[in-house]
Image (cartoon, helix red, strand yellow):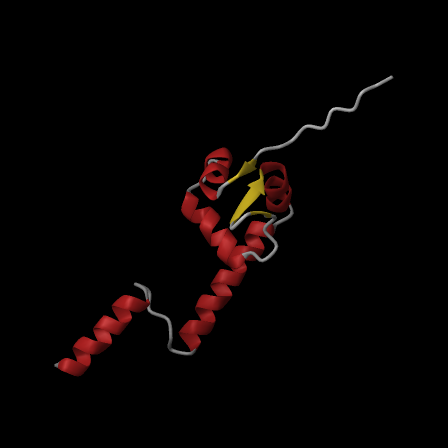
Length: 101
């Protein structure tokens, strides 16, 4: 009689996933922000990732869809005059300085 052994894959936090994939944690954070289809597993209040699921998502072009969504959001903000390349806080400070002077 053959016994079936189920291999349990560890769930990785963003830092662990970044290390396993040889990327920066900032890249994983961008994927999580812009890729609505990034495979995650809820574990309490945190989100974890299975490496095999993320590799399958990556191979299917998921990361390209995420970065396309990010570029589209930036272009929309530029068209509406809401985009500042150094971030919103610096834009607000620059506006305040312009009004004050």
